[in-house]
Length: 452
Image: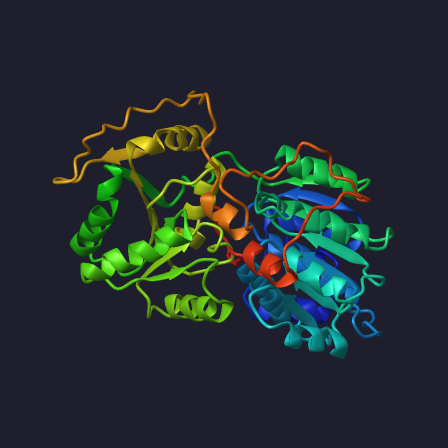
């Protein structure tokens, strides 16, 4: 099958052909023809499965027939969980639609409002936005939604995990009822199913997920170590192996900053990205990492959402993530397009519950190694694949920091999401809300060129 059989026009086909993309991925082959027919879709698809093109290509095709006529309007709205992902999606729109006259903009917090407002006044066709900043602009009457024809919810599970549920439902409340809806999510949690059920009527469900993601092409192993020896072990491994580049995941922004300092004291230069850094700094660090100028990048899990590095040889989990699917997303940053990759985790005794759930998710035990001189005083028990914890581990602390909540507060998903919800909560100032919520791990990628 080729893209020419999916119903796309010559300008779009020429653009993607020049990029070297000739054969659609499974999710693209299934979803694009349905989207072009105006169907509502709910798709379970991992990041890296080609899902961005799955909704961008039909969006461009449908909007190419005309242009947005009025200021402060758009005809397509794409919601994403993080700033980095919003920028990445917008770049894809520009690349695939380079032969069209459509305009797009990425809207996110952490930057000045003025340029975004001016772009909306000048006129755009497609808005790619994080929910917090978009809602801010709507309340400031900088954008109106009365001409929206298409809504895309990208990485819906991550947006809900980050606490965007109220912003999403409030935005949906303001959209025209007659519109097309596309929802993409790596996992179909109860919260995602409730959101989809109440906001996307008569939807067609698609799924291209596999239970064995993360196994092919990635050599996974872990080192058991006491928690207070992790930074010393990491320094030792870096110096012993002389890795050319590594993406290191840690749970909190404070921990990221501390680890950079600890590595620096041992003669290892590293950079960190997290929600506490400005967007300009984050973009520069990512650009330097992609160019190879930064060898070791330390990132909180959410901040890393949207990072797309070709031929990244190594991912290190300094802290194990929760939930288990997040581990699959993280290690999927390496081993792309058939290349070999390596994923290493530093595991202490208090990581045991997370480790059990991750190995249950993978359906296999991860190889263990002990590094001489770093043998743990507190032994990590041998995990079992059918382990059921009595108490769930605390969710990603970085996510709580990003959405400005205290550690003891968890988002309440107990109530069914309503497309016409009338509930409201106290809100902080608009700048703080949008900036704190938005921060940014993809899954194992398929063996095709759509690894972006």
